[in-house]
Image (cartoon, rainbow over all chains, first blue to last red; front, side, top):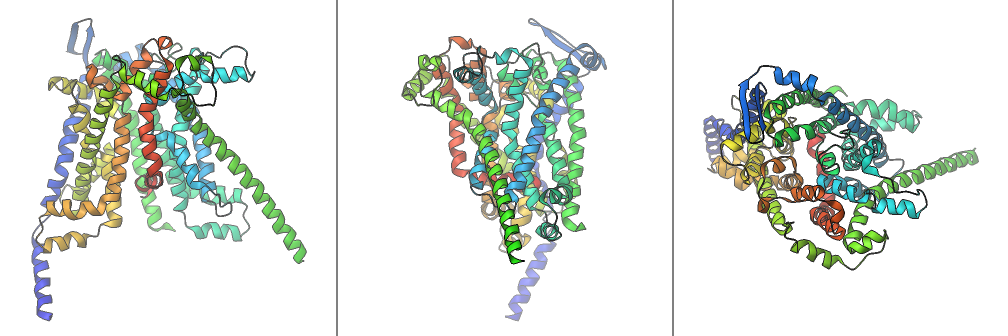
Length: 317
Length: 290
């Protein structure tokens, strides 16, 4: 018995001395090959192409000729990119603020020991549902629902709320409003679940202590929940910002790629898409690099906030 | 004294009742907002064009089958073909993504090699890079390799999914003890065999979850496919929808339009309703737990 154990131990030791570490490279190799070929090289070549004059007039291709920073100058000063960046930002923030507010409220309600709400599974299922559906189909659906003779107008007229149909797609406020509403509906469920997980990760005894000390639920929320939720809050904020920069499907389909009316709903990626589709590579490259810089900047913050969260759950309290 | 206590607790209960009522009210309102578009969608998909034009009702029509027939027989909208393309692309892309990415996660989690730290930091860094910013280089590269207008650029690049790697590493930390793999080594199992036969079964719940998310995002993907695909018989569902939007909308049979949106949305919605408990748990697993 003793001897067999010893033999086994010896065997394990010998095995351990065999180095398995090279297997690590074998397992990560396919990922890195694919990533480098299809993402990293394209990314770097996008940087490279952004310094070349390269576009197409009809069937004739101009360039590529090296022109230095001229594309960047063009993107920033000669195109309407700053305006499109502003459009993107406005549409994002108007959709995001109510989303955060509602998500925070729901997350607190769902986790509240005092309220003990019923049918939670049902509500969670329903509010997360819009997140899974095809953004383009959702936009098409909204387009048909809010078209001049669509169900929304029919309903409003039959309820005598309006006399004439509202032409949603011809006004800046209503078109933007529709995009903002879709973004809100698609993402508030997701944010609720994330914040909920964050709240559930907070030590329950802190809430109990606050309760015993006689803190009101509002006070508990502002003095206990919010400060401890900060890392996840930052994470949500920044991933949402990055998502906002990438906004494309919904406004593209809703306005048929035109950013109507008068390009007030044209987002950065819609503009990029136009240049890519018409093979206007120089400007597209410079715009891509600028978008990359902004996202990378935000990404660093996410990384930092995630890492901070680790240290908080690890020790501090 | 005791009377006073009772009255306080009564008051407290009453306050609780009011706040509960308020909570339910807001929850129900927002749930209705989420459900309403889908209700209209399904109702209108069952009605004829002429009925839809007349005005909206909450009653179902009886033209569901007819609308479906009209849609599937329209030669301008190769919906059947698009469905097959979308299913094929989404299935293979998500399979590749979860297999290759969990392999990577296993490599980083299990072994102590020199570049381990670098590999992990690299993956964390690129997790946030949007696909749109490398689209230009990607399209040029695909054109040079003569892969434009094929499914290749829509499937193979999906294999490298940094977010899945991150999620799987998190998951392995909670369910996969090193001893399991070491025991397999003692039994003389080759590392790759161990991964396929022992590690993958342990990871199954997480793999299934990521497969669903990956399938959904591929199914819904519009940006890259719209730039890569040209031929009519290679189009995917989102491209068809965009095409429908750019066609002269007023001339369209609206029953058919609603039906097409139904085909795009409903299959996933049904799957979601069956798996919702599982999916909702999963949303928060990887993204927040640090």
